[in-house]
Every structure is written in structure tokens, then in C-alpha cells.
Image (tube, rainbow, N blue to C red; front, side):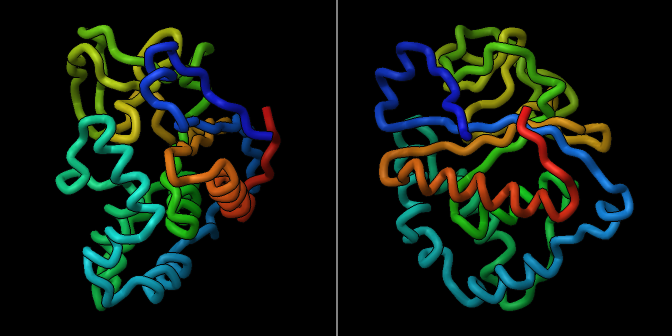
Length: 225
């Protein structure tokens, strides 16, 4: 059901026991159903699980530790920039009151809830903004990359781990996505992605991807492309 995303030979050699799993889905919507789709209650339930815990408690979870070690392998400072699931929990869920719910778009919200439930970072791209040749590779240097939320592109240094298609860089892998393939109101097809790292099994990632589809089915009918 899930396919592995190819890696360049040098990345495959360095990142042994790392695998990116993905599935391309077409979303068929009932507009009335989508308009009622709301994940506020899910965030409230997640808050009940985590409130009162310290950042240290969160950082010691075995799945989160696995992704911290992966960040270390990539040369990223996981204390300064923690893995996405850890970051969401520490920013929003450990406080005594759930002061703000980071709702973005029903598709993104569904994937975020699934990632938090399974403690596996997940990504979602607009598939119509992605060409063929999706792969994990190292930047050559000089590639344009416009980080999500940024108004202008930047030139990448050489040797950065990126997810790219035949035309462009889609993300600084596990660190920051691009504006190029962000989810919008026009999104009708998606790439749903999860990364397996040492200490995380393929089943862990597949279950998180399954959960994301369960959450998406609250507002969409899903068809594998």
C-alpha cells in the first residue's frame, strides 16, 4: 500500500535504516461535510494526555528520542529545533490550559492530529504541485528554496539533505517545507509522507499514515492514485 521514496546512492549509504514511506491520494469532498470538519475536540483530548508534563518528560519519550537522534545525524540541533511532534506538544499541550489550537487547513489539521496521536512526524504536500522523480538527495548548492511562510527564495548551501522532485526542492528534509507544494483551498490530491528512522519500525510509520487517512476520511473520500 505504501511506497518507499527513492534516495540518491550517497544518502542511502549514509542513512542506513532510514526510509521514507508515502502514498498519493485523491480527495473527493462533500463541501458541507468539510465545513463542519473541526479538530478542536481532538486537540482537547490530546491536551488531557499531556498537560502538566514537563518539556523533559516529552523529550524522553522513546519515539521522540529516535527522531532527536536522527536530527543529530543530520547535523541539526534538536534542542534548538526539536522534531515537529515534540515541538507541537511542548508549545501547546503541556500547559495547564490549552490557550490556542493551531488549526491551519482541514487537510493539515487531520495529518497533525494523526502525527500527535502516533508520535510519528508526518508530512503532506499538494501532489499537483509535485512533478515526477520524488527523491531524497543532497543539495548541490545554489538551488532556490522558498521556506514555508517566507516571501522570497533563498539559495541552498551544498550538502543539505533535501526532498526534491525533477524540478525543485520541496523541503529541507525533516526541518522545513517549501511554499511550492503547500496545502491550499484548491488542493485535491496529496502526497502523505512519513519517515522511518532507527528505533522506529515500518509498522510504526504505517500505523501513523493509516491514522492520517482515518482523520482525513472525516471530511473526504480517499482514492489511491
